[in-house]
Image (cartoon, rainbow, N blue to C red; front, side, top):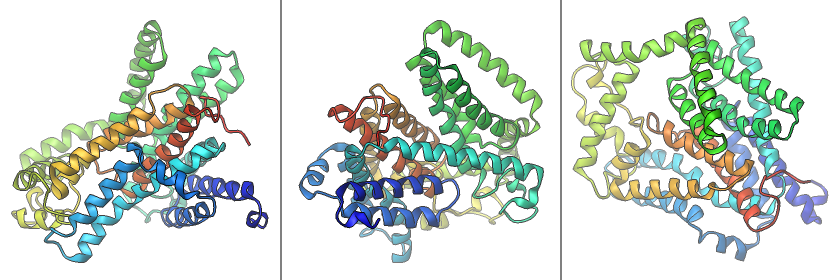
Length: 418
């Protein structure tokens, strides 16, 4: 830090190390991530070259996130919500403004892989904490006796599951690569790390969103990197192991059983179960969208619309009021209409297209986008704090590494060089 005042290389290293620190904090802290990213952008300002950065903003991968945030800001002008509600709803989208800066920096840096290694190590430590909480629940930072705190040291089981799923699927690429190169020890080590994530999800706690997204992400990996015979063998093995895990894990059985039970309770008794509430939110959100299909009802309008549409007491599903319809597309559609949906999907597609190459960095970025798109069917994960920052950091760092590789700055594998 002392030498950064006169040494450009030291300034670049500082920016990289702050990004590494944010990746370490992401599984554990919310305020730490927010503060860390503000420090990161301040450190980046000392290294930023204005003309190259402005040129980089012309790329769709950079321009579309900015356009989406600009639409959210303009949406405050035609919203009927209070200004406090409008600004509160605008805030979750602003994290997308960090994407152009991350693309720009990690296209220049050779240390992008440090960020992902730090995140993997931090998530691995989180599994250790999770196992310890199972043994001694008093170690959890959750409220004593909280049924949602089983196996959770900090945050919640949805965030934890998202992290563990991403780490598991991303590790499949280096494991296969190491096996093909005959590096058995390294491959077995990474396999043990991946197995730790899977066992924790199977026998401690896992979200239903993770149960849906994990098979999809693994199927994409199989189609992209394995031969058809290997795919058949692995599919049969996965089915057998999945059935065995379901048989041996009461937690996994309870999670899958809740799908049918929650739907039945909602339909028969109008009780606010997780699945029932989502169906209720989605149905009402489609009606709100149909009322203002072009530009939506404006930023921050969602809660007011649900309040007006609520019928009956709050203990029933129809009486629930929420500011988030638990679907990213509907979240955007209600507030900014068809224009918002087009921009959202254009951004997702541009980021997806960025990672259609070979190498570990492209694979990481592809899985981050894929996970966010599919998990956003059941939650507004792009705007949620934790999953949103997973997307911004993952796509921003991996995207910069891929851009660097395409320009000939480093090998396509994206391996960090100091």
